[in-house]
Length: 420
Ligand code: EPZ
Image 1 (cartoon, helix red, strand yellow):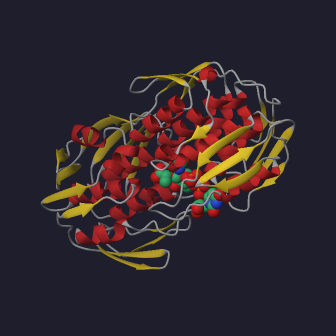
Image 2: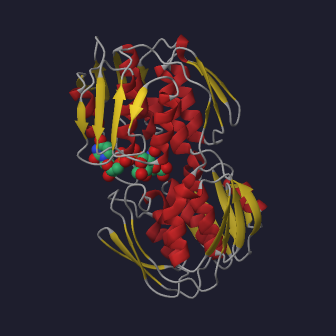
């Protein structure tokens, strides 16, 4: 198993290119099931989760041609509708094939994804919405079995809670349904916008893209013919590198970023004392030695993202006063707290709120990555911790960060990948 060894204290400088967004690429790959013609995707991030979902399409009979950042997918050859446990158990986002498989083939079986490190993460809202579109759903033997032999029927769906994956599944299902589907209380993340635009560019009429009410006129089971899709820049990867600039008090530039997508993170870092220069698709952060403390609460886009909570907590350990971090989306997304404390942080948890007290220094230690973003928070802390930090179990990082150590090395960090 690989681990990352970081020798803390180096200042960062220079520029790196941000990769395509994992969380946009995943639904876009799932959406290719809605087509029986080849489609090309570009600017894919070179990460394990993307390879896992492409592998699932292959198992379903799709023809996939994949290099690091480009894939051509032809799901005209798809001949199975069973998303097997072996793949779904590796990656929860595989549940995104449920809506498109059911919409195109009128039936499918998808392994139940189960819980994960950051919380219970049920899929009840996905299932309830598909049932209201006429699907018959039963859960048996660990699989969701869904049927709609005459296709799905457009309807009005009101999500009880804003759900990114639920919105994506229903947008995909609705695009091949009979009639009009209205999704109320839909998610508004940039990843949802990209998915809707991909489908709209294939000729489906969609209103309300990027708002909390999306209206979709389905094709009545006629498969779509997609144009080439270029994956948007990864706003969470970009936010993570901004945190690297902030925690090390360095000046670094990120290329291929959409500043609008990371405004909530920029605002918080500005409040901590960092400065920004934004030009076209480039952002430069100028970090500051004595960061001010912050208060943040995670919420849905365009609010402060839960996927940046762990990284900001790492940065907050270097602030000159006490910060408060409240996690409102996931019930167990604080696994990094005890690991950051191993590095000398002074973080206290009470329910969903963490108080991050100031400490003079962090000190290198062996720490364990527990989930994707928690892992990147440990790497950030390692960049400033005195001495050597070893971050173990970095397979979590490899699922979602494209060449993290390569990019940090390019910026001047002393980091290397080693084998246990
Ligand atoms: C997406 O997960 C992202 N994953 C997550 O990113 C991200 O943390 C999350 O959205 C929130 O922004 C991908 O895009 C692949 P949700 P998703 O459905 O779709 C509850 C990362 O680090 N809920 O918006 O699974 C749920 O438990 C990952 O890249 C239900 O109760 O998130 C959570 O509390 C981790 N029932 C809340 O809604 C449901 O049926 C939001 O979850 C569905 C969700």
